[in-house]
Image (tube, rainbow, N blue to C red; front, side):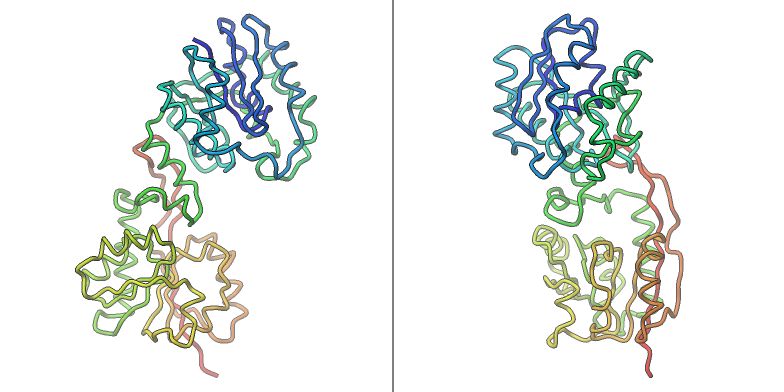
Length: 388
């Protein structure tokens, strides 16, 4: 059986898969550099230095052209070209690699390999937010660490000085122990979605942030619903929940007797939101984002709810134009300090009437225990409009 290492860029093969390339009992190894569509054969029995010397000239400059060659069909063609019908084992990036281009390629390669009935192992790779439960660990010898550093310093010097987030090399991106895991399609897709922003990538799976299965999220949502009810009793009028996602909070508010206009601009999330609240007369579903809710036709409300959604660069001055006297905001403490507090300090229209911790930080497993991460806590801030 041959090894096929599929990476975005040539240096990735050395940074995350040197233990595969340097396996003393290894057979012929094929390296697929998907960013350029290159397939390089590393001959069986060749020492690590010889193999790395073949890879070095393929290291290119960092730039926008360094994108995966494409989704499934292109990945399948590259694997087929490298394997040439031989029994093979695939090694590639993690779908949860924090460098999004690598994560995208890792998921595409795994899908293509599944179609060809080839086993796949993912490198943990660069994942500063997740700790992985790996299936195979390869600690590197001092000799191999030296070989890796020599390769980086000789062939990748331009990346040591690079500030491109996808390609820059720092200590954490040059591991001395290489770790790998296997995953089925559902686990890969959940890992990929977990690291996504609030877009179609995140919405590619249901409940990407595991609101329905996480103890932390259940505690956070329960505390948030109780906090909202304390300031806005169910009989006080229709609340406007901005960015309702799939309705985890909306369901709690409706169960407590609130009337809710739940708005969600992402169509995939909105479809799931409507399905989750079907037959609930107390809830109306809309597609407006924060900006759209400031228009002249926007409904007035005793309170607008901006719960865990001000992470995506929204213009906070839009809050001034919301048709309400109260806004309830919930954010992790670091974002609260970085975004809301400075804006509030300069606002003549709003004051913080109350601040309360809804839930503290916690370490929690995700994706069925494949990894764990730090949930950073949530703080609720009640904003009241000032007069004069």
